Amino acid sequence: MRTTTLSWTTQTGWESPPGDPGLDAPAHLVLYFGSTALLEAPDGPAAELRRRFPTAVVAGCSTAGEIHGPVVRDDSLVVLAVRFDSARVRAEVIDVPSPADSYAAAAMLGRRLAAPDLRHVLVLSDGLGVNGTALTHGFRDTLPAGVTVTGGLAGDGDRFRRTVVALGAAVGPRRVVALGLHGESLDISYGSAGGWSAFGPRRLVTRSVGNILHTLDGQSALALYKRYLGELAADLPASGLRFPLCLLPHRDADTGLVRTILAVDETAGSLTFAGDIPEGAYVRLMRASGDALVAGAGDAARHAAGLPAAPVSAFALMVSCVGRKLVMGQRIEDEIEAARHGLGPIPALGFYSYGELCPGGLQHSCDLHNQTMTLTVIGEKN
Image (cartoon, rainbow, N blue to C red; front, side):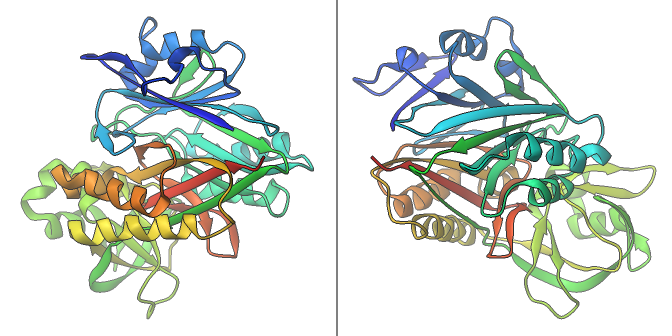
């Protein structure tokens, strides 16, 4: 495996490390992440990138921030070009007309990609019009046993207006790209951790429909959130990212899955989350300090680095949540440093997302996570 990293900003244009071939690199797979405007610009850097790699699988998505090595940027483009020695990559894309179609879309992608030598699937999904919980269930129910899934939901800064996903020259919203990685030479590891802590009373979900939460303990979920947020309520949904929900497996549990806000409905008094909030479940509000989030990023790296034996050559895909970026502010690169320290000296890039995909323990090959740092290390043995 050989990798090349590139970046583009309006100030510098294209940049790559000294001695790297940059846009002339031979590649089987090209991953890129950037702002919605850059991805959709017909004569922009993303369009140029797609033209320069006509024989590669070229896929990307919009972000809430780009990760390039130790640096976090906004309104840039970051690129990883990969040439495998013997592994191969196969891409599939599907449109998702509505969140209710998310399970069927993932199931179709899983059936298309299924093959005896399939090892792993990287997923880039629309971040606003797709139900992440249903998406993970669709992949889990159709992919062969032992095939894992990681990736993320596209972002749009803190605007929450329009996210896009790209495969080849086709770029647009409400779509999911799945990249199947095939071959016995591949070595895959992953890790996901948060650093958030729950506070306040446990509250019963008394009315919800999928990922739309209407009432907690019989009260308007939006009104309850506004009471907690105080002056920050004026900036919903962005400010809600600082206070995600912990979805508890049972009433007395101390930990559970984290769920983050995507949208609010003032008329209905409801909140839309990146994943399902089932009726009858118990939830708690969460918060975190910058130090706790940095520690969580380090934990994710230790998990990712500690699964398979280290391959000869590898790269890391980093997907972190926009909520972490808002909480940490100018300290955001501290979590990247912590993750890179745990991973060691391998190329790393990625993006800030509206949701992260990663296996959950030993039970599931794919789960939706929110407010985590999620790392995928993909290597190839000689």
